[in-house]
Amino acid sequence: MARLWLHRYACFVAVAAALLITAGGLVTSTGSGLSVPDWPNTYGYSMITFPPSMMVGGIFYEHGHRLIATAVGLLTIGLAVWFSRAEPRAWVRRLGWIALAAVVVQGLLGGITVLYFLPAPVSIGHAGLAHLFFTLIVSLGVLTSPGWRAAYRPAEPLRDRTLLRLALLTPAAIYGQILLGAVMRHTGAGLAIPDFPLAFGHLVPPAWSAAIGIHFAHRVGAAAVTAIVFATASRALAHHWGRTELTRPAMLLVGLLLLQIGLGAWTVLSGKHVAVNTAHVTAGSLVLATAVVLALRAHRWQCPDPAEDLRPMTASGALP
Image (cartoon, rainbow, N blue to C red; front, side, top):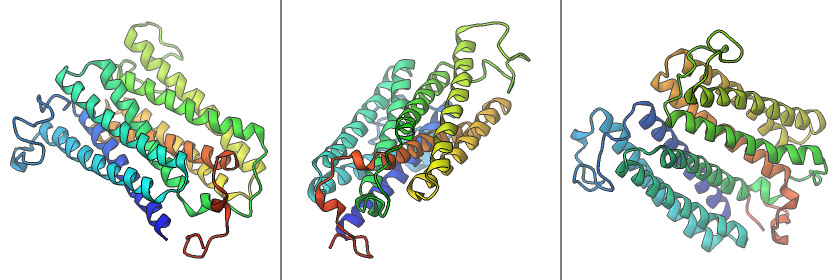
């Protein structure tokens, strides 16, 4: 039962991390990154004592983002400590401490971003690490789930090499696309091509600049990711229909990808509407996390778990 509660807590931290990504997306979408010019204080106040009455305009988004980040950091400390005390697998305990290190580095990058007036490389790194942190917390939720500990019985080890390879390729491709999106956002190239699905009325832009090249590369990357995701999901659904631990994330992955494509198009056509632009950021992270869930489940039998994790489980999800 204790491990089941650890799983639930990891899921709670994952939800908080998704909220943090959304808050960060709002900061960028509203151009509020420098609304609070000092760090770690806020206009001379400590983060906690800053008067709520002063949280207006861009300060609301930036200071709110800092408060959520602080809460996620504290939750992650609790997660790492809990893992160190209750998790029998050494490699999973290490992942808990890696998550804590990631959130600390993420906070430092956020501070550097403010103090050095939003340098693009640091801002891009800050965004990229945020998605990795969220995905790592989601992975910890998977690794502590009752299904994982039961090895998704009565399923047999997956011997489909094609799906195993595609399952690894998919999150890597999605993360590459997320980084391209971060480059586009933080270099101001989001509307370098103002129409969709064409580019200045053509399949390929008739004129080029650095911003247009970044934007068009993001579109090409979206097409490549779509092809890879559909190949992975099709393989899982066509050859392993009876294995719900694979088919469910595969179908969810396709649905989220289609939503993400729609949000990307809407972002351009709406002139980067704040809500749409932010939803596009959050949905991208959900696509990545879902692909990682599928990859973990596909490779369940290759993970170094102790023999006790394969013992039958009680109805409550606890080990007998």
